[in-house]
Image (cartoon, rainbow, N blue to C red):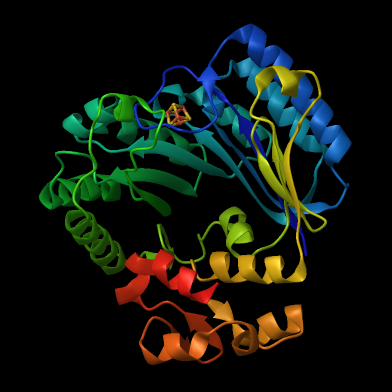
Length: 361
Ligand code: SF4
């Protein structure tokens, strides 16, 4: 099984109000030292196997200078790439320009992930972001002209004050850009975020559900495949990288706070930039027992709308799924369904997925 590669760039030029990711303000000195530490980590950890995807995320990788981005892309040359590699680079809309796009193309990036989040001005104000539809149309057009035919857009909904009608209008604008992939996120107000400090409250759960159902309805009508709880893709544009996570397969995680799954160990690097720069990368580590591995297969696999293959599960773990998990009562009450060989959470229950997973594990 080929592995995936995730590389974390923790720098941002401004901080979004909802963000609880591991990030810091961009500073050339920090970026310089960080890229050197990253190179060391990659050289130490990489097992020289063929990889099926590379994902450079953050933070905001596109906020680095063009020279720094080139240095970073050169680092990825170390990986033996499979022929059909998916290589994603996360971009802030405002950073996209011809020079950046040509550089990405030159180093084999074939998928862009753009954090648009919303076009509605009141949403953008609350989220702490700034851009217009016109800018997005120009940048996406430029990327398309330079040959990028796989673009993901992130959409945030359930922003305080937003109505379902607002969301529908927002989604229509997203669809104008004709993205191959849309990742949707219901806004969570996490501790230690600007929104939480401002004592902003989340919207009501019923409204959140109504919005989620609306997204499903609209995107499915537009022929997007709802292949994972929050992710929609045109045919054959499902993310190879993200499917690695949900298929419970191994992947490298490089960089500050990055998580990986290698040789049966799940690890998360330190979140302390000073430690990371000094080569003290280790944070948390968990050696997986066979039951731990199986649990992950369930927790991650049932996020996929297609669900889990019963046969593959048995082949992988040498035990039938019904012998280790209480699927019979869940099939009986409709929390789970079985179609051919696949066990899955039906559409009408996907919103309460976490409760169903709790009953399973
Ligand atoms: S949401 Fe993304 S761009 Fe905004 S501060 Fe967090 S990491 Fe940076």
